[in-house]
Amino acid sequence: MARAAVPGGLSPRLAWRVGRLVEIRDETPTARTLVLEVAGWPGHLAGQHVDVRLTAQDGYQASRSYSLAAPQDGERVEMTVQRVPDGEVSPYLVQTYRIGDPVEVRGPVGGWFVWRPTDTAPVLLVAGGSGIVPLMAMVRARRAACSRVPFRLICSARAPDDLFYADELRRRVRDDAGLDVAYVWTRQAPPQWPGPPRRISVADVNTHGWPSDLAPVCYVCGPTGFVEAVADILVALGHDPRRIRTERFGPTGG
Image (tube, rainbow, N blue to C red; front, side):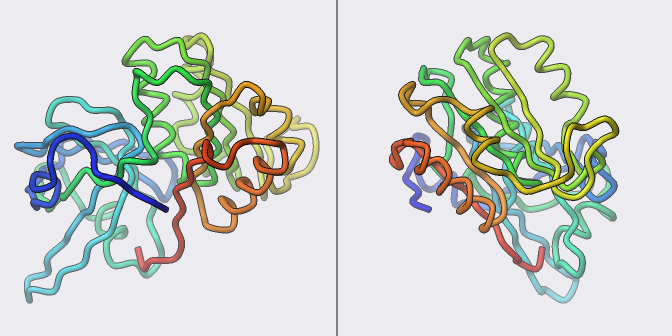
């Protein structure tokens, strides 16, 4: 994925800063939202991510990238971390990291997969699993800016218990005019759901997305296979590839 420089200069983004945990919210049995206060944070755009670095007592260091889950809010940095079994970083952040503890943070990173409140084109967001995190930052940024840009979000999750931000998404659909959310369940659907669990299909994107002639900007985030499948569907439905922005992740050791 191509990335470009963003306003704010290069040096501030490359500097490691110490953040301290000020709030924890459980999202699923294996994922938490962590809110950090980072002194000197240069600000960020919805869709960007940060690097987080841990240092062991013997000096060994491990770092991973995590998407920001909320728009800029002073020196607050919010991210949602999914625990990866046998990972080096995520098990500590999800299970051990406590209020007041420090962690090193660097960023923001990324300038292509972003949404700005000044953007006016319709937006289609398609999330696979934890890929909803940067897309939720866009939904929240739209809300914070009182934007009326029409948003449509398609969430693919294994089961209702694996869906991040479930309660907030229900509130957003109720309270945020112009936001629509649709779901695809791949392993277990909720009771009374019409149809068995399945992977996202052309029909889902065609039904719950935007027609290509409206020229929406499409943001797709999730595992590599999911992103490639959705991008292919969008192109087959006539969307301009230049308006399809993708962010993907694969096994990293967490």
